[in-house]
Length: 117
Image 1 (cartoon, rainbow, N blue to C red):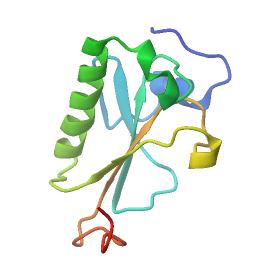
Image 2: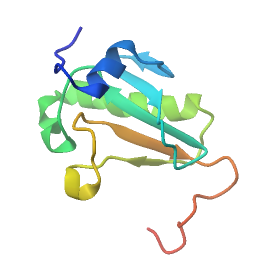
Image 3: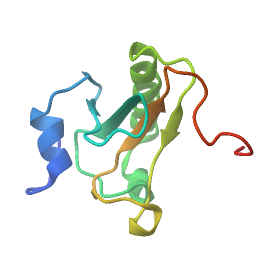
């Protein structure tokens, strides 16, 4: 098992959670407070606090992470979706274990997209 942090909720979920997808050192789970029809979280199995620390991943591992995110969205039936990462408390990060949000809507375009580029 990759290096994990004792007491980290997402380390526990990476190890023992109800995974939607798993592979290559990453897992996907459903968000417990979804803000979209499909709201998944992608977590590295090893502990990295925040996106600011993404340099902890090798280029190959970073590529696997991005491919895993895209594959997970496709397997969830999403063609159009948002991928969001919050870096730090001021940006809304509440769990300090790097994670990506995959947000998709089955009922048309994402709300609030007018004027958002």
